[in-house]
Amino acid sequence: MTDIWGFMDAASNRFAEGRAEAVRSGTLTALADRIAEALGSASRADAEEAQARLEMVFARMLGASPTATRRAVNGTAAAESPEAAAFALGQIGFAHAVAARVASKRVEDGFVRFIRSKTVEGYVRALLGKELHNRALADALGKDEAEVSRVIGRLQANGVCDSRKEGNRRINFLTPAAEAVARDIGMGAIGTGRFHRTPPREVVRVMEQKRDELPAHLRHSLVLVADADAREAA
Image (cartoon, rainbow, N blue to C red; front, side, top):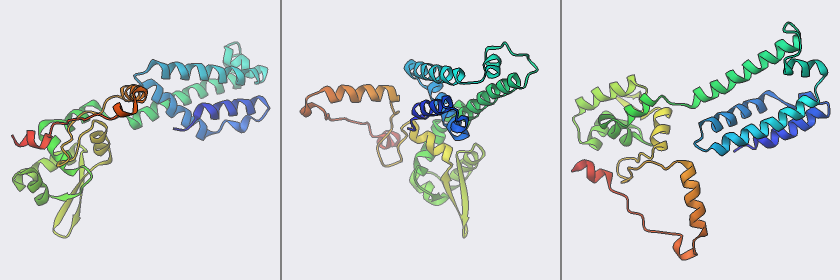
């Protein structure tokens, strides 16, 4: 992950030295990403870190700013002053940037539920990391080709898969959004026997820390995972 706090520290130091060009748009975009991650994290520590680091950078840059700028930030400047207008626009612009970054990365809950529905899930697993025409997909799922064709139409209408024409056949494949969701929830491809949800990253982090504290001969354990393919065939 980009060390955005290091960038912001360096940028604010340069700003204090009179080089206002130090804070560039790319840095602010990365900052918006980091704040979006903190807001979406289950860990309160991430949000607290963002708050503390931003407070420090803000105070440093404000202290190095002209009097007119400080008045605009503190709300003591005339509302019609250029500085007050610029400050208001900056706040609105950055809030918009954060909202846009969050929206660009968030998949609607309904989309996830659709992918995990009983009918659709098998198709997603069959197409995960693969490109299959209808006949091959029907064989993989043990279904009639006409039924597969109907379901594929639903998947395309809901943004789960797309297709391209090769000769007389149409090759089906998952959209990037569907593949990302499938991998994020731990949905394994057919034949892998994997059918589990990936634990939250906070849980994984704690588990790894605890494992590292164990003696070397206890750091690896036997893990049994139910075979989803056998379960579905039952």
